[in-house]
Length: 163
Image 1 (cartoon, rainbow, N blue to C red):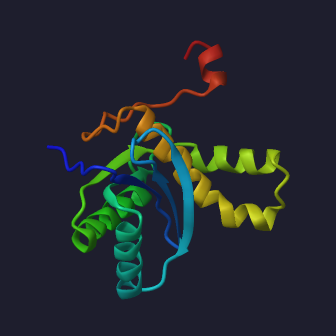
Image 2: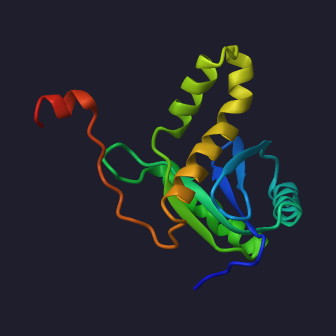
């Protein structure tokens, strides 16, 4: 079932217990752009913030990064991300999809270090850039509306040992 409206955008979320990074797609759903890092407050203020964000950016769907272990198993943080996604559905009325976000924060940090950002400045930008990386991955995958089974990731050392 498609919830697509003309010129609507997708909101990408890098969920965190204290900070939430956000990115937004273009209307054609091909390019992700960093949007903000939001410091969570309380449920009422957070609800106002996300309703306004969705309205101002003409959002018609949300993709939330699912923090999973390299084994592909979901842990406590993934459960909290799913719970928060359920809350977001109730306050925005929009469909929420989940997408594997393994290594997005690490990649974001590497990009920021490579760009010469100092540690304190990186902290403020990391979640927003991770949201952009997550959203771009979702867009590049064709904006799936169903979750793919999460596969274990093998690091390069394990691969070279044949395990």
